[in-house]
Image 1 (cartoon, helix red, strand yellow):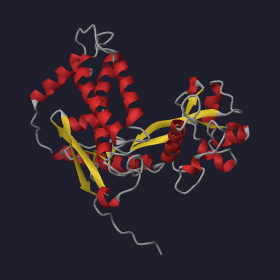
Image 2: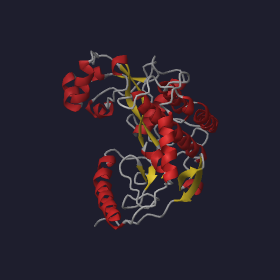
Image 3: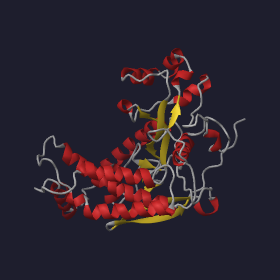
Image 4: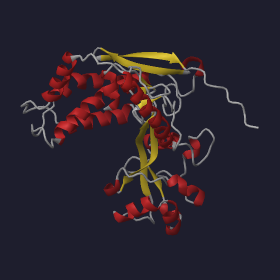
Length: 354
């Protein structure tokens, strides 16, 4: 929602093609599907590395350094590769065996996650299926060092903002970002508000937005439900804008999102038309933003013809600093988007500490 609100206000987005994926979401048993179980922390305690349906460890084949505990996005890419090669688990992932370490080790290293899985009846002495899941958008609303967007007076902080993390966020840095940029954003926003004059309100824009929001409550009896449109979007993102990308899939995703924008969003039918406690209405508004943002992300990912950080193109698997040491900026252009690839500014040269 934050991304699309900023886009519609005229702000630039940056780096949104870098979608960080994890490889430790539990896929089965179904009762805990989607729970994150960070088994990587058990590998230094003697746990068995991730393995495929043939019982083979496979991560070293995908890690450029040949290790069994690579970076998070390589975990996701490796699991995807094994599934596509027909060596995945029954539910589309790989296997981790928590029973390869003692229950005492599990409770010491991952107490909350272990207790949660046990509470749902998961047998922690047997292998469980784990797979890939979307985790973090490394980009977002382009900000300066005081968290101001490219629209004067509009500030952004947290995961909706973009720029600090580049092509791949390092673990823990989202918390640091909140502390550093949260303080800067609050201070700068307060200063901007105290010196701002009376704003010129675009009442036509406000009225148009009110009509758009309230139109979902019209008495439509036929049409797709919001959750059905969301399911379509999730499948498109998973199939074409996820762990491994290519031009054909990204082009298909962009076209599908354009079709959904025209055919499905305005035609959604809600189960009820109340204004209070209407979760169908909330989901309809969310889905409209999701389709718009998915279209922008797929477009940026298609434009970046290289692999860098959390963005992997199987048709362009190499890093290409010569052509793509750049940020991709996105802004609203009518009903579509304008993309601009801008060379990255040169950062400070840090002298080693004595």
